[in-house]
Amino acid sequence: MRKQVIAGNWKMNKVHTEAEDFIQTSKNEVPSSDQVESVICAPFPFLQKLVEETKGTPLEIGAQNMHFEEKGAFTGEVSPVMLKELGVTYVVLGHSERREIFKETDEEVNKKVHAAFNHNLTPIICVGETLDQREADQTMDHVEGQVKKALEGLTDEQAAKVIIAYEPIWAIGTGRTATSEQANEVCTHIRKVVADFVNSDAAEAVRIQYGGSVKPANVDELLSQSDIDGALVGGASLEADSFLKLVEAGKHE
Ligand SMILES: O=C[C@H](O)COP(=O)(O)O
Image 1 (cartoon, helix red, strand yellow):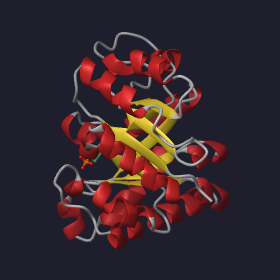
Image 2: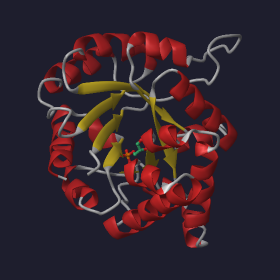
Image 3: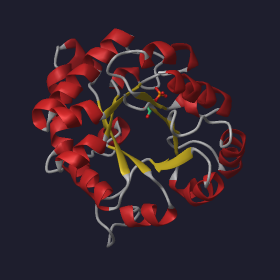
Image 4: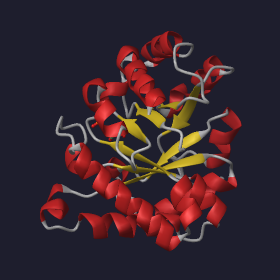
């Protein structure tokens, strides 16, 4: 039985006081970590404080991106060493906004996944198709390519530990959710890709989240699907009440 992972991705939202209020309200309200993994992926400036404030609680803190190098002349970047030193445990990699706006490539995502494992961070690897790709019936091939490239060169044990977030780009921030069947169909394919590319044990172990307009009203149905093991949530993770409802749903699946 795979444990559900509910991760909030705050993106570039909140100021310090709002981040603090959220954490104070929710840190002791999330279910225990043996029931569901609860993660907030916050902007870099909040990470240190949030890690300190959530110590000893089931709420984990993640980053939304990082560079793959440990240090050097990379102005504006943050390294895996820095994140690890802060006590961050998860990192979102290859989010579609990074791929689209900041032109991140599959090769860079792969280097970041390796860097995450080198520094004991759990990568949440985002994959997903555009509306044009879906309409051209290219979803499965596109997602398959992204998954294989992201996992390239990992050991079987590492591949089993990644979290893959399937996020159809047309459903992100649009209020337009993939139906639970559409989401599960792609997640099932991703699991098969992992089975073929790595092995069946890794495929059985890997957690696959759905992301794209997930909210308390649709989370139960999405999480009840056979190959969906959690959610990566943007808008609905910004309010503590709503985030707590999502993690509560994760507990039951
Ligand atoms: O990382 C989260 C996703 O981009 C989904 O965002 P959303 O829940 O606001 O659609």
